[in-house]
Every structure is written in structure tokens, then in C-alpha cells.
Amino acid sequence: MRAIKVLASAVAGALVSGLVLGALSRLFMRLMTLAADGEPRFSWTGTFFIAVIYVAAVAPAALTAAITTRWWRWIAAALGTAFLMAPAIGISSEEIGYVQGLSTIAWIGVGAATAAVFATVFAAPAAAIWLVDRVRIPTSVRLSPA
Image (cartoon, rainbow, N blue to C red; front, side, top):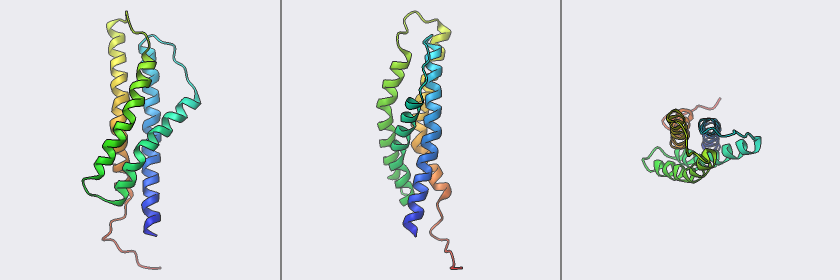
């Protein structure tokens, strides 16, 4: 029974944090394209894969957090962040495209949207751990049989 609760809390933490922050990241990518005077493209397939990448990246951190409260669970969070960095850099550079000749305001918009994308990269594993910590039943609490 404990294994099911651990797995359920890990899956819930990974799904919620990955889907929400993946969707936010996708939104910031669109804003980045608009700020760079690009033509924003939207596809449900692209959005789906970004969300799947976020969920996959935070799943180890969520599972580790569901199993233990020790400090080393943050290692899994750091690995998830590192895993998300490569696609974030690639997609961000693709979304910006050719930026020569942008105005100062456009550069500020591009910079802000880029910073927001990377903020979601750092926040996703931490959010997964935070969510798992909120739903975990403390081991000191004993449930009596009904």
C-alpha cells in the first residue's frame, strides 16, 4: 500500500509541475518569437512534446522526493534541470531566429521571455518536489483500520 502512495504522489507531482511549467515555457517561447519580430507558429504536437519533456525531466526528482526527504533528492532535481537545459537552449535559439537589427525594446522583450523560459526550467523540478512534499503522508501518522 505504501508503494502505491509513493508512486501516486510522484506521478501527481511530476504531471502537475511538468504540465503547468511546460505550458508556461511554451507560452514564453511564443512571446519570445513575437518580441523578436518573428512569425509565431503554434502546433499542438510541439506543445505536447514540450510538456512530455518537462514531465520526463521532473519525474526522477518527484520519485526521489516521494521516497525520501534527505538532501540528496535535490541531486535528481539538478539532473532534471540539466536535462531541460539542452532543449531550452535549442528551442529558444530557434524561436528567436535572426535578431540583427532589433530595437532596444525588442531586445528587452526577447531577454525577458528568454529569462522566463529558463526560470521554468529551474522551477519545474523544485515544484515537483514541493508538490510531492505537500501530498506525502508523514510516516509518524498511523492510519487505524476502519
